[in-house]
Amino acid sequence: MPWPEQTRMSQRQECCEQAATGIVSMTEACLRFGVSRPTGYRWLARWQVDGADGLVDRSSCPATSPRQTPDTVAARVVALRLAHPT
Image (tube, rainbow, N blue to C red):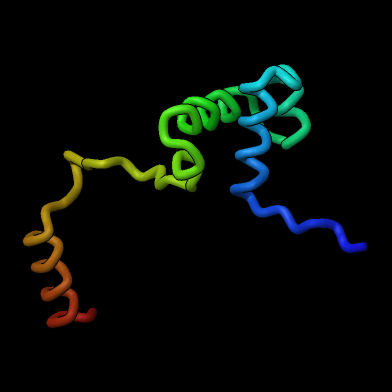
């Protein structure tokens, strides 16, 4: 009999379910699934608000970068580099 295949999402959901129902403490659930407690609490909060959809991987890049070079300036730099490769 083969073992049932577990996805990352199913493991996250199982961790949240165990911690939320009190089967185990959050510390024990995090140890079982190999994540830090802050990550476990983050998953639990997102799971309680959005359900399984809240456990999807999210981007960690910032929403804005105020010091980023404007696109017009970057386009000019690229054009100059192409015009003068050396």
